[in-house]
Image 1 (cartoon, rainbow over the protein chains, first blue to last red):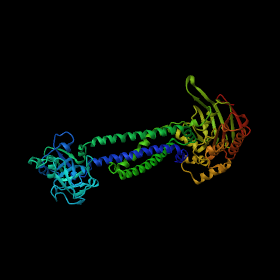
Image 2: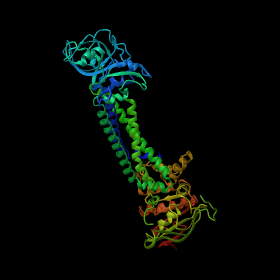
Image 3: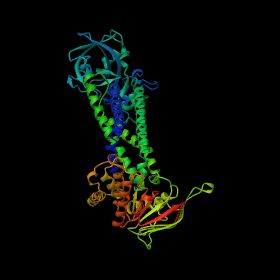
Image 4: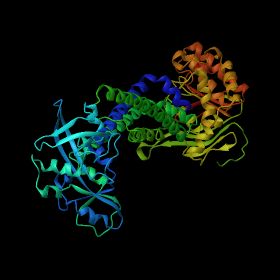
Length: 368
Length: 229
């Protein structure tokens, strides 16, 4: 890095400019990754936290299974006998609106209906477990942040089912709406949707059968999805992910071209010096290694600074705008930064190729 | 590398011909040139531009293979060597002084010299001492930490000469070293070149079109249309 470091110092203005561009791209990549992660959390953290390994939906339904599928909860007994299944229990999922009785505050909730005491019933962080009080619900911390607390009562729109809040769980949501866990029977009354005591048939409905284990063949006819596969059935999830991935893809392509173009121009400007070093006996490998080290120094430094700034912005945004779906995701962000560096090097390879083709004879001026 | 022992340890060109192009566009840059330079001898090659002087240096400096003929640099026969071997020969056995110095913009005067050992591997304490000694020999100790844009044309050329001596070359080649200098500085550089050639026992060839600078040379040969006379 004899030449690389001295060139970096000597032409620091130019390299700083390029480093700033790469750094800004890194900031954008960090924010986008945080946003993508935040959107995932907002959309499917409720599903991700389900203890089930698989969900058995109604067969023959096309898409949006969480809102379109209905199954008979009694199927759970049949599923429990399928080889590989350790436990099976009905699960209900519906999006609804409710009003807090005393304050009149309106909230959207994703009501998850589970059998109290089953493996699907969550442990409350505070308060009492599901089933300790009739129609009692456990609410996501997101609703606590919105001002609800244990002892309040939610009244579901239209069906007018009264849901006393008996406990809280972690910050989970589904379809960008905060989750509340209710006993399955309560969920079935909400799902029925009309005031008054629902008919018997209303209590023979669930969204899916939640399974724990690796279901083998021989179960009831069903659309069985693993928990991860079920994310795609959440409203808007696939479209959101595709949009974010497309934006990130273009960001990477842009950064690759920016870095590539810069080093091509830089190498062309340096052509006489490259010819000189080669005339002095420097091998092409010496010059390529040197230039590659320079590319890496610039990319790693710029990406590191960009990541730090991006991380700072995420921390700031979470404080000043808690509603914004942005979340710090170390794994994906490290991957994104590594991609920026690797693609930058790939872009710069176009320039490095030119180094090997410079004729050392250029160093001898005048006529030959 | 095919090394054969020769009668001289300096520079020897034997019936060297260099041609560019083919057919109607064939240019004979060097035409059966034979030239022997002993270690410590300072030979000036004079001729008008286009006479083949730079081609002579390109061939003598292992930058290009001649079309025909043999080139020996310090006991090593250059013919048949691959590009990587030529590069090694250049960085270990040959010193170049280019027109107007031809220094690297981002390097200080000392670093211009230290680049040479770095091209071959590592810079040792001995290399650093040698760089300082050479800078002193060309009178630039006080300006060792300056970059080319902070040096005058004459100073740049002195750095170029010191760099050419850094690898203890068997052959020292100077390509119009005074092209960018005024008369007084040109004389100083040529005198310095001659003194260093004698002192360090390098077989030295300087090409120039300036016939005023020849008194320092041990021998003067003339070049016209690719032929020596």
